[in-house]
Structures are given as structure tokens and as C-alpha cells.
Length: 425
Image (cartoon, rainbow, N blue to C red; front, side, top):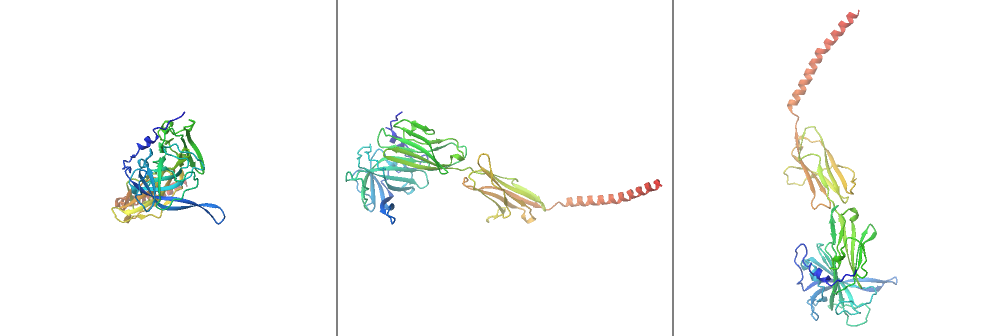
């Protein structure tokens, strides 16, 4: 099966405004960037090593022949092509981080099928990252050097202008995902190229606990598909998103979506973490009444959470107080219990032996866990009362009655015993 990618770039262009409805930066003329340049140097051991140099640069959008807007930095002029990277990002300039690097084709020398490409073109990548983690997009910029046939890396001077054309983009809107157990989850991966009938290979791999596993692959050249979770029809429109089975602990790891259009290879890592919040309960109601001298074991249970780390505290404060609550020190903890579904549970408890001055205090169990946006709190208010005086009267009356009865029964018993002894003789 061979899929024609004629409408590939249109599918991504249509997604310029994301699900959050944030404003597109389609009209931005330029973005400040860091150009991470590199050079090969001979180290003290006689071996070649790569050194990286961070240089100020600008990514400028315009037409062939445009002059730099900022003449104090290196300018990468992205001229019009069927792939306009501004269509794939959201937010303003202050929410984007731009980084440009050299890209090596690994010794593959071939003419890119796009319009105006030459066999001796050199490549750069431009990665735009949203500062709040909404997306990451990598665009491959093609530059035709003035000197034909030179395979050595070109030297880029300060304030130099390099005219480029966007040839391919690979992006994800889910660079980091936190999801609960037994949930549906789709990992977003999208791409576009600047020409029709592109030979595309898409792969998904999972890196987990030091092992890398291929979970899907597709080649448009051979039509061969391995694995599941990605729609081959959607790949033809530039959508390589992966739909996961219902999530479990085994779903955690780093997923790698890669798109190979020779000689370019683009990929993005997507981190997926399972976050299941705890269910918190206390073994008493919203109020607890005790008499002076009484006691109560108070237990706070946090159940069904993942991952393991959880923090349970018992707090004490006068009702209506505006001061910071006191953290109780006499709290004991159970061991972590590992549940059948892979989640964990923990209990925190203490023995409450209140005095009259503890009456009116509020006791709160506070639970922190990374799956919770804010801590969970469960509270009760304590009321302590003295024992009822009627109870004392009843007890005292009972003691007097029993004492009188004993005083009457004992002589009667002794007299009966003496009479019985006389009759025996």
C-alpha cells in the first residue's frame, strides 16, 4: 500500500489554533533565538571532540532578499514555503523558546525533493518550545550555500544572514503527560513536508526501565505496518498520534515518535507518568464528643494512590483561629500497603486523650501527593465534657445499697449456719 502525502502540510496548517483557543503567532516577523553552534577541536589526549557555543540569533520570516531586522545578531531568514512554522505554534513571543542547531544527514548526500533544493544544501533545525509545556515543534531549515560542492561545515559569522526554507516539521502537543489509571490517552505527534509523494517512515518506541521497545512502525514505500495504535489513514494527513490502551503502571515511560523522510530524521520524546490521587478518609465524623478521662484512636487513611510518595500530617488548632495550626508529633504510621491494582495505601493514627482545655479544637488530616493539585483535608471538631453528676449519684447509691444488703445478708447467713450446726448434734 502506497499513501500519497499531497495534502500533508495542509493538515497541520489547519491546526494553527490549538484546543486552548490561544492566539496564533502567524503574523510575527521574527523571534529571538539561541544558535547552538559547534566546532571540532583536538583535545589533550589527541582525540577530536565537539564543543558547543551559544550565539545570539534571530529567526526572521520574510521573502528572498529581505534585510535583517536585527542587524546585531545572526539572522536565519525563513523564506516562504509550503511549511510555515508559525502556523504550528500558539501564544506570544514571550511564551516561546527558540533554539537553532546544525543538522547532519549522517553522510547521506542527496537532493531534497522540495522546490529549489540542491544536492549540496546544508541543514539546520529550529526547535520552538512553549514555556508552559503546551507543545514542542522542530522544523528542518534548508540552506543553499554560495559555494557548490563544499561538504565541509560552513562557518557562520557574527551578524551573518543565512537564507533558509522550511522543509519539514515534526511536533507534539503532549510533550509531558500525567494521567490516571484505566484512562484513555492519546499521545500527539504530527508532521508535514513541503512536497508531495514523500517517502515517510513513522515509528513509535517506548523507553522503560532501561529497555526500548518498538510498539509501532509504518513505511509508505513498502506499505508495511507493525504494531497498532496509529491510524495509517491519518498518517497520510500528517497525523501520527498514538492511541494507548487503558492506562496502567506499565504505560509509564518515555515514548519516542520519529518521522524519517530521507535524509531527514525528526523525533520527539513524550514522557508519560501515571498519577492516581489518594482517597482520604477519617474514622470519626465531623464532630467527636468525649468525656473527661475517655480516649479515642483516630485514624486517617490514604488509599489507592500512585506513585508511592505521599505525606500525611495531623494538625491541631482552635476552631476559627487565624494562626498556623500545630503539627502533632505523637502520630504513628502503618507500612505502605501495596494493593492488587498496583496502587498504595497508608494510615496515620494517634491516641486522643483530651483534657477539658482541648474542647473546641479542630483536628485535621492533611494529605499531600503529586497527583493532587492541592492537599486533601479531612477535619473534625472535638468536644470534651466532665462526667455527669447524676452518674456519680447513681454509682454512690448503688454502692450504699449493695453495702447495706451485704450487712443484712451476712448476719442472716451466719445465724442460719449456727442453727444448722446445733441440729446436727
